[in-house]
Image (cartoon, rainbow, N blue to C red; front, side, top):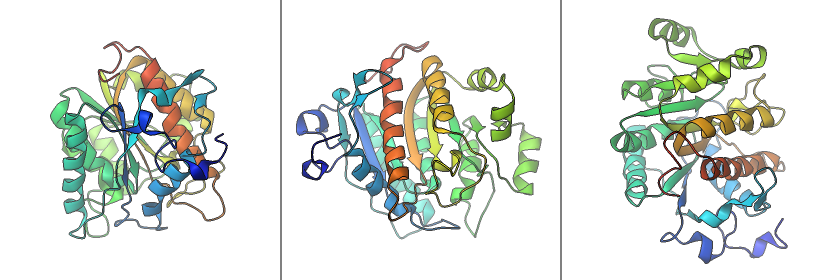
Length: 303
């Protein structure tokens, strides 16, 4: 833990310029404080700042990996200001911004904000990778064709990713509508509900086999059980524990090349900083898996 986090630079990890300048950093943290289509609790727009603030109190030596992950260089760019032209306009802004960082050969971590923002990033990654699949960790299916008057709601993001022609593999789901259940049945989407993940041992190998060589990882924090992650807009009982989640991510990173990452849907609760810290540590720890693991394609090209 830093001696005085309040004196550290305001960036992910509170890193000095040597490890946080855009020119030399390998990882970009892109904050997107957007929650225009939220449908229960609002406040995910405050998630990125809460995560960055908490990250300045992280112990930067990773206990499991026994390494200081920040030494690859982690830069935090300015918040992407929400546009008022509606969700489709915001997605265009996100796509353009993500593409800028990919062209600079950075590993992108997008921090939300609501889950709808993932589609903008996916559109940029699609242009770069022909063999991309999306591992979608979420308590909800997010497969509605339209919700509350827009096809670009957070409740529709999975459906829109599929419309882009990109394989979507769901894990941790434990809530869906009749419309979504019918869609899954009709299309055969690979989905691993939380109950299956608790009860059956074979699901992990099946999940990894479902993924393409290169994977975009999208983590809605409500995939976790509310007992450890209560600060989300749409909590659902019965989710994953911290160790279940990181063990899954470790296995995926060991067998596939994770090329991009987002962590979304933190809805900070005043007076309870534990969820903010969990989200920050999750990002940092997962970066360690991506940096340190060999994959069938070798290490990710930027490292």
